[in-house]
Length: 619
Image (cartoon, rainbow, N blue to C red; front, side):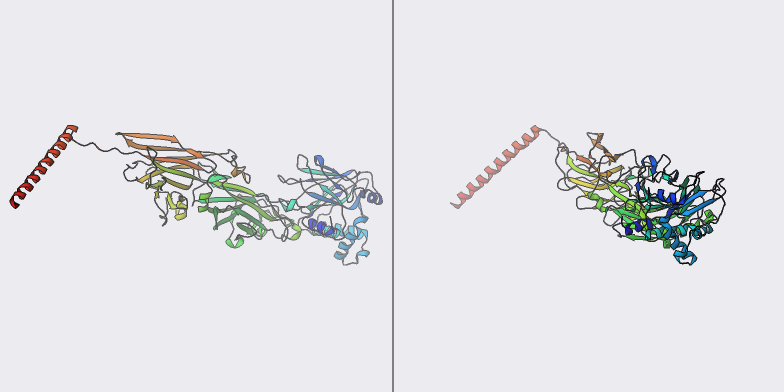
C-alpha cells in the first residue's frame, strides 16, 4: 500500500490510544524496541477473535458497538512508548520508541514553538501529561477518560497524521472474526503506550464509521470500547389492508397514495463538529414521488421535534437517484433541540429516533407490470464517517433497504351461453355492494386503468370529484374488457347495458381478489418480487346472480388466475333469449292459407271475365 493510499484510509478514521503497563518485571527501553521489530509492519488476522503480534505479555481488547460487528475492520497498532512501573506501582516511567521519535518531536515542537530536533524525550512526555485534565499519580490509579473534544484527542490525531506523513507504519490487524461479545484481543505486545488506529472503513465505505479517540490504562492489559458508530436504517411501506400496517410488502390500486417510512437513530456524533446525513432513494418508474410530502421528526421519548423545511433539502434525479433528502448538519439540530445530555466533557448523549415519511403514487405505467415482480423502492444512508474531517468530505453508506408493492388486473370476457363473444356490453366498477362508490376508470392502450380516488382529492374509495377522463367500460369486438391496477379486496362489477337483444344482469357481480404473501413480511430482499418467495399465489372468486326460468340463480366460482401476471380471468355470460308465444293453432293457419288460395283464384276468374267482355264490345 503506497503512502497516498495509507493517508487516505487513515484520514478516514480516528484512533484509539492505550497505555499498557508492565507488571513486576521491568522491560528496558532498548529491549522493547528490539521486540517491537518482531511485529512492526506485520499483518495478522483474528481467528476466534484473537490476533497475536509478537511474544510480549501484554494485550489490548477492543469491543465494538452493540449490533455493529467489528468484522471487516482493520486496525493499525503503533507503540509510541514503552512503559515501566515502580515495584510498588506508585510511579510509572515512559521511554519513546525510536521508530516514532521524529513524529513526536515534530508535533510537540510545533506545540511548544521549538525546533523539533531540540525536543527531548522528557519534553514530549511532560507535554502529553500536561494535556491530562484529570491527572493521577502511579501506575495503578484509574483515570477519567478525556473528552471527544479535548486537547489530548486532537494531539493524538496530530501525532497519527504525522506518522502517516512520514510514511511510518505499524502492525495491521484484519478483523476476520470476533469473540461472542463482539470484541477482539490484540496480544503478544510489549508493555507500552499504543495508538490503535482504525485505518479501514469497510468495503467502498459501506456501513462503516471511523473510531473516535479513546484513552485507557491497564496493567498489564488494556480494554476499550471503540466509538466508531454508524447509523442503521429501516425502510417500510404502509399496507392498508387487513390491519397489516408498516412492513416490507404492500399492494395498491393505480392512482393510490403509497406511504413510505424510514427510521434510524442518531449515531454517536461526539468528536464531530458537523454531521451530514442523507437518505438516498431509488424508486421504480411505476411510482411517482411527492416531494411536498416529506416530513422529518426527531424524538427522544419525551420530546418530538419536526424539522423545518429550511433544515433539510429534497433533490430529485441526482446522483443516479430518484431523490435525496439531505440534512446538512444533523449535529447542530440535535445538540440544539436535545441539550440535556451534554456532560462535563461537552459530549452529548445521542440515540434519538429519526423518522422520515413521504408519499408516492402508483402511476399508469403499473398497468404494464401487474403481478410479479412488483414495484421496488430502495434506500440507503450517506453519513459522515470521519470525525477528524469535521463532518465534511468523508462519508460512508449503509446497505440498501428495499420494500415492494404489487397491483393486479381482471381480464374480462363477455359471451352468451353458446360461447358467442358479445360486443358493446357496458360496465361500471364499484367498491361497495350498493354500487354507490364507483371505482373510476380511464381508457388505456390495452384496456381500462383504475383512477384511485386519492388522485382526485378523495380518500381511496370515497370522496373526490369525478375525473374528466373517467369512462364506462365497453366490451370490444372480441368481447374483451381488461381492468388494470386493482388492489386486493372485493369489487362489484355492474353491467349497465347489455348488447342488443340480450337481458342485462340486474345484480352486480361480486369479485374478491386474494393474494397470498410470505409470512415473513419484514425480510424482503432486493429482487425477490420476481420470484415466488414473496407473492406466492393469487386467488379470485366471483359470485354472479341472474334471474332465469322464473327463479334467481346464484353462481360462485373460483376464477382462473395467473400469479405471475397478477391476472384473474372473468367471463360474464348473457343468456340467449327465446321468442314469446303467439295465439291460434296450426289448423287455423292452414284454413287461413286455403282461404287465401280460393280468394286469389276468384280474383283471377273475375279479371279474366272482364277481359272477355271488353273484347266482344270491340268487335
